[in-house]
Amino acid sequence: MPQGKAVDEGQTEGREMTNPVDDVLAEIAAWRAGKLWGASMIAAFLGVSESWVYDLAKDPNCPIYKPSGRYFALKSELIEWLRTKPA
Image (cartoon, rainbow, N blue to C red; front, top):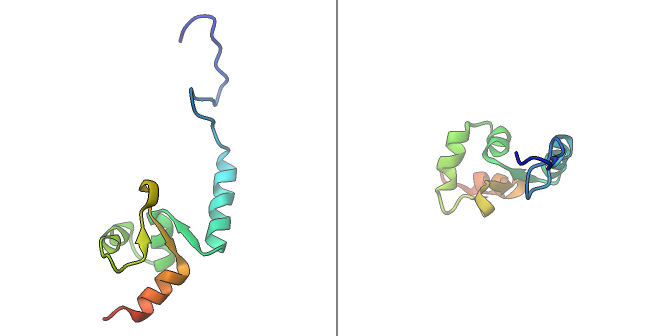
């Protein structure tokens, strides 16, 4: 660290730190709104492993998306897909 330059604790250069509690609250709000962000949330909703979610996401007919590098799904689309998916 260069002399004479103080860096606030919890701050990273070029990026603002977010409050972890706010992140959790945002995920809870998304969950209630029917949005599932991340393979772990999708897996928890479906009651399967994360590796199964990754395999499902490879199916072009499955409504699991990966915008900006993070898996995403809507509960309503997953439920409809599961109802109409051939056995």
